[in-house]
Length: 352
Ligand code: 5GP
Image (cartoon, rainbow, N blue to C red; front, side):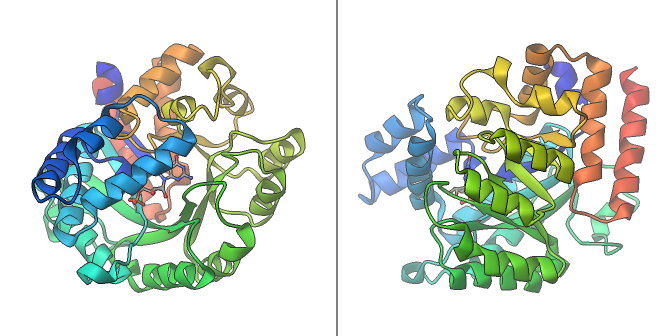
């Protein structure tokens, strides 16, 4: 595991509210418990429980959102999550989150994202570059401190309407200069229809935003086919594909974000030895290891690398290459890619 921690890594599939530390969730629950908003022991039971089936996970998210959805808490968790990834030697992070509107506390999707940005600016353990092409932050230039790139993806929740999805896309366009690079479609896969989100996703793509979709978490082959035909820039999971969609995915060469622990714990894949990682890896299909929800699934990106290595018999050379090739699939410009490749080159010298 230590070696996996020391390798520089690229994280492309991490949900903000799924990556919150347990200690923070407990602290928040205690405060709300004292105020009588929630019953602390109920929350404790849900957070500590081992049951993480897909159905239960979405219930857990509803609970987490009660604990975290106010501006100052969103700022706090953003800072903590970014610092946790930095501590793991993540050198490029694409963090995704669903902008939330909550009129009762005066929260709009924009003010939610402003709170996220404040959390990013509060990061103190590393120098962060969050601006697109060439517009580097002051601290980043010439500094000898550890550095990290952070970009954002705005998630559309499958419970949302076409209008709400469109609002998220417009917000992403507004926030491009602040490091928002794309759109994700996520949320409970048995809720909502592809046709509801398609207009907003199409608009996003036309406007030059990158798109990644949660695809194939349940065996809805018609939706999977429609998603591949849309040609997103990446997809997440790809667990329940039939043979025809599998062939389509491979010929379209769409990179896949692989979340091993998440797939096992949600029981989307019954056992690690039959995980589709193996088939995609052997076929040299573009793929990247990711955490999904490091808090909810009690994992880290280093643990995911360690798990892949021990489960699929990959040595250090293969693991390093796997980490490095992820640079090809990031939603950032060539300048960032070149800089990241240099970071990996430096690291390989130190590790050998
Ligand atoms: P947030 O967007 O609130 O920062 O992060 C939590 C949200 O991400 C959840 O409410 C859910 O919409 C989405 N999410 C997190 N993990 C998963 C997953 O494994 N599958 C899907 N489909 N959505 C997820």
